[in-house]
Amino acid sequence: MPLKKQRKRKYNIPLFIPHEGCGHDCVFCNQRKITGFQTSVTPEKAKEEIAEYLSTIKNPDCDIEIAYFGGSFTGLDLELQRRFFEAAASFKDERISGIRLSTRPDYINERVLSQCAEFGVRTIELGVQSASDRVLELNRRGHTFARVEKAAEMIKSFGISLGLQMMIGMYGSSREDDIATCEKIIGLGPVCARIYPTLVLKDTRLAELYKAGEYAPLGLDEAVELSEIILNKFRAHGIDVIRVGLYPGEDLRSEGNIVAGPFHPAFGELVENRIYRNRIEADIISRGLKDCDYEIGAPPSETSKIIGQKGSNREYFKEKYGVRLCLKRI
Ligand code: SF4
Image 1 (tube, rainbow, N blue to C red):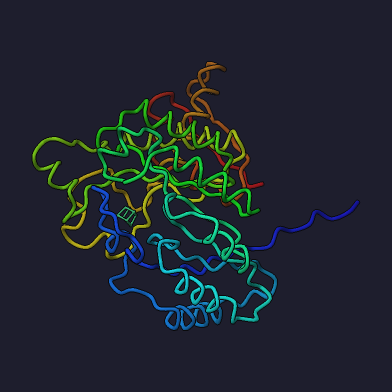
Image 2 (cartoon, rainbow, N blue to C red; image 1 turned 135 degrees about the vertical axis):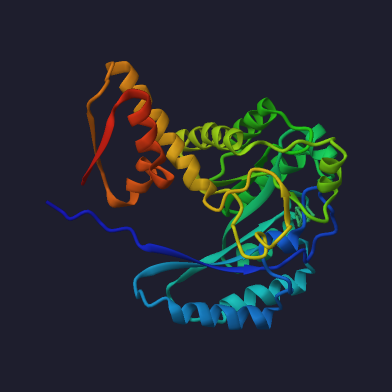
C-alpha cells in the first residue's frame, strides 16, 4: 500500500507595513496598534528581517511564504512595491514558495496585479469588512462592496489566490448584516478568510462613538457565538479560515489601548471550543445521555479544543448532564 504523502509544514514570514500607503481613516482603525509595530518597514529592513527569520527555520523540507501585512500594500508607490518584491526575491532559499500580501479593494488595478504576478505573489488578501454599503459608509471605509467584487474577480483572473477578511460587530452592523457578509464572501470564491471581531481602540473615532453612547461593541460570548456560525459556514464551503480574532501582540494589549470590545488573547481557541461543545451537546441530546462517560477519539492537536479553555467544556458537560468527557488519543 502506498504511504500517504506528508504535507509540508508551512511558515509565514510576517512583515508589517503600518499604515503605509493608506490614505484612509476607518473609524475602528489605529493601524499601528493593530500590527504591533511603531515603525515603518523599508525594503532594506525587510531583507534583514527575512534573513533573520529564515535562519530560525531549520526544517529543510517546508513551505515558506513572505507576507506583507498590516497596511494597504498595493497603495504604496508602484516602484516601492517593486523594491519590496525584489527584497523578497533576492533570497535564493528554495523553501520560499511565494509572497502574500493584504490590501484594500480599491488599491487593486491591472498595473498592480501585473507586477504582483511578475514577482510570484501567491495570495492577495482584501479587507472586505462588510458587504453592506451602509455599514461601509458609516465606518468610513471609502469603498463600496461592488469594488470588492470587482477586485476579487481581477485578482482571480491573474491566477492569484484570493483571501478575504471580514469584521463582525462593526458600527451600524447587525448580526444579520454580518451573516450576510459571510455569505457574500463565500460567493466570491476565496481560498481563505479571516474573521475579526471589532474592538474599540484608543485614539479612534469608534472610541468617541463608544464614549458618546452611540456604539456598543459585541460582548465576548456574543462574538464567540457569531464567529462560530460564520466559521462553520466558511468551512462548509471549503474556505480555510486562517485567523479568528486579532493577533494579540504586546502593543495591542498595552495598558489602556483596548477601550472596549470582545478581546480575548485566545479568541480563536474559544470559538473552536464552542464548535466542539455544540457538536458534542447535540449528540448527547440526540442519544439522551446522562450521568455517564463520553468517549472521544482525538489527535493531540484537537485535545485542548475539545476540553475547552481551563477545562470549560469538561465542566459544562459534567454540570449540565453528569457526562464525563474521556479523551482517547488517536
Ligand atoms: S484602510 Fe486599513 S489601514 Fe487604512 S485606515 Fe482603514 S483599516 Fe486602517
